[in-house]
Amino acid sequence: MVEHQRWFRRHPKTAITVVVVGFGLLLDLLLGWLMIPQDNRFRCPHPFYHHGLLPNRDESTVWGKHRVAMITNSLGFRDHTPRQIANQPGKRRLLILGDSFTEGVGVRYEKTFAGLLEQALASEGIEVLNAAAVSYSPKLYYLKARHLIEVEQLKFDQLAVFIDISDIQNEISYEAFEPAEFSSMNRFRFTLKQFGQRRSFVYHTISKLTQPAISSAHAPTNQDADLFPCLVGMDPATMADPLFQETASLWTIKQEVFGKYGKRGLDLAIENMDKLAALCKKAGIKLTVAVYPWPQQIQHRLLENLQVTAWRDYAKRHGAQFADLFPKFIDQRSHTSIRAKYFLDGDVHWNEAGHQLVADSVAPLFR
Image (cartoon, rainbow, N blue to C red; front, top):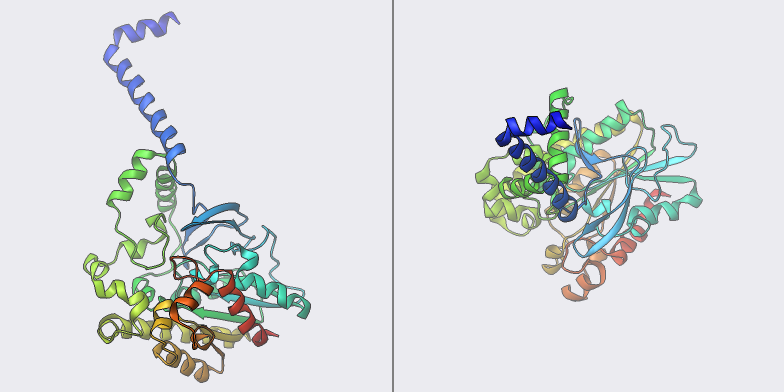
């Protein structure tokens, strides 16, 4: 104790600096614990399919006004319980791929269409796995399916891909992404940045002010930019272009948007889905492709549009099943009444009734 006192007397400035810095760090961590939302801790980057969900998680998350449980199984798929998934099932197995609609944001898993299909098909001896995640698109559908088949050695009989309107924008965003193993240094840097993002109030605040905005119209606003490195690396002029922003929902409606970004994104999407079809054919997996409208397409009553015709032609060319859900959402009812019935309030994603409609519509395809 005496030695400590002597050291402080000999080095008063250093001692004061140490105390102030230490107090500042403690205050920073305390503010981080109190002020930083602890959502999306289950999302992670992936070296081979860009991003996904961490395995065996059991927590909750917020999507808009809705807080729901986020539970994942051993493969990092959203599920009703953190269960172990066998590579070789003892029954038939349906794997589902899609983006945030299919992940089921804002809705508890049992009420998502994947969860409802699991319940409906159980009596048929069919297991359902939902491999979807926010902001996926055909390039990531292909890369994730390939990883599951070739690396994870996961066996499944059927694959259903629910292609979203915004996938066309995301295809441009992911164009430069190439699968590559994370280096030890990159893992360390990500872990360090992740700690700062989730624990340091100062680091979290500065990074929020300086990181580019994620362009996808339905990506959570509080996602860590590290999960989307190729989006951050995109040309800032493209990300800031209003036409690129509109591509997420309006490429089927506005010719100017389709001409500048939509056609390129659709070409990329079909190219990647061609690879997925070849992968399924090689593995003996039955492929189903489904499409559905956003509220913008419902408002314009676009039953026949490029999203429908392009993927209908694709399915015919590859001998895949095709599910056109546009007529399920577009009928004689008004746009406002349809939106109120099937979509989350103030959101483009489905509520429980919307998921039930989708589940009822596609279940016969898998029996």
